[in-house]
Every structure is written in structure tokens, then in C-alpha cells.
Image (cartoon, rainbow, N blue to C red; front, side, top):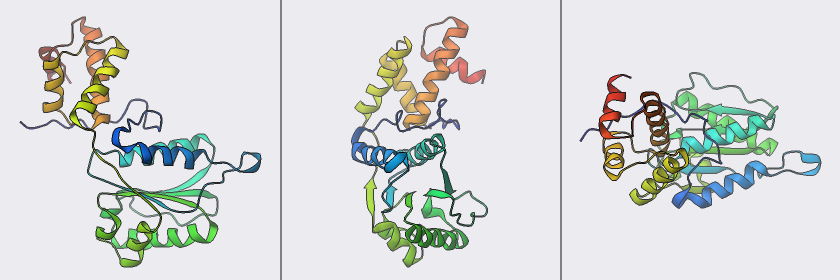
Length: 230
């Protein structure tokens, strides 16, 4: 059965707090400590050793990078950001407190050149660097000097939540909203829509809002009606 991918993000935005770690607890804890590290007088004192996250689509890589970006913004710090959709990478700035790179497996030759320059400057200025890609460092289709740099620091493989974990999270989130999700409704959600947790949480929010608006219980016909009226 074809799944429907909802092209929508988490309503509250990705944060470290709303990341459901499951089997990825070690990576989450590492980033929590790294982001929260401070030195004297509250100044950021993060480890300059780079961190690389890898895993299949939906395992949470982009969520964690954007969550770190959000946390850094809330701290009032500046940073460099580059992903595969960045048309032209920024020149390195000494005002940056860290460098964030997403979807590195898709980088063009020009983006790889910029990423390598960022690495060199990060080492020179002792800045933290967090990157993510689909493949482990050794298998990245990148220039060798960049590929080796992604692999010499902390490397975490992210795993998808199991079906029981995904169902448990959905059930917990629904209960918190006062929404009853029958097994048949949950089966429908997991087979007809994108199975990554971010999209499922957003779907639950949309279903809850539509059910309240229409004053109906959450059922498969209600979800179908919501999608027809979207």
C-alpha cells in the first residue's frame, strides 16, 4: 500500500526535548551535554572534536541538527549552517560558535570544497562541528580528505524506532491530548502515511484539531474526510 508523505514539520519545531530517542539515547545524550557545555562565566566551552550522525531516512538526523541549531539560537550564539539545498555556502566567520552540516552525502563539488574549508577553520579556531549523512563516513561519496575528517571524531549511527516503540509513542501522545486511538486507526496511520515520527506527530495534531472542529471521534472515516478536505 502506498504511503502518503506529509510535507510538514513538527508544529513546535525540532528540539532535543521532543526528540524520541528510542535506540538513539547515546547520541541524544551526547548532544545534550555538548550543547549545554559551558565554561567560566557561562561562556560556551564545547568540545572541538567533530560529531557525525548517520542513518536511514526518518532516523532523526535532521531533527537533531535542527534541534541543536535551535538551542544555539536560544543561547544567542552564531553558527554556520549548510545542507544539500544551500545554493552557495557562506564564507567562514570568526563570529561562529559552531558549524552544522546536514545531508553531506549529497554535497556538490563546490559544497565539498566549502565544507573542507569549514573543517580547517573549525580546527584552527577550536570550534565544535556537527554533521549528518545517510552513510557511514567511510562510504560517503566525497573527496577523501573530507570523508576522513567526518570519521575521526564522534560517530553515531541512528536507528529507526521499532514498530512497538512507534506505536507506544503515538499512544502516549494521543493519551496526553485526550484522544483515543483504536488499533485499527493506528494501523491506518502507520500504513497509509509517512512512518517517520515527526510526520506522525504532526498528523496526530491535525487529526485532533479536525476531530474537535467536527465534533467527531477519531476514526478511519474521519481521517479520510480530513484528507479529502485538505
